[in-house]
Length: 119
Image 1 (cartoon, helix red, strand yellow):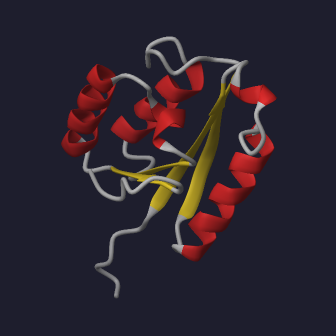
Image 2 (cartoon, one colour; image 1 turned 60 degrees about the vertical axis):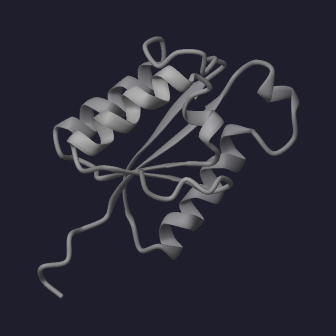
């Protein structure tokens, strides 16, 4: 049991201005659901990263997302937990880059509402 790797999660939540008008996408609702998921999966939560009112069209212009990736690279977390994949990115090109980065740093992406369990 001692050799089991600790599961340390960064929770990523995001809403764009369009999302804020829809139900079920508020930052608070996403955070609450993801905290419950982490508790269920026995993940330690390192930090909650919030990008409010920011589009997912690219990863570069999201300060909290970039901080989360930096923390991952420094070994502070080994799971990224998001509500849906579209909270993380809407770009296939960015997704490809993200998958490569996650693999390089032995980090996993879990999306609560999408079947993206392990990349």
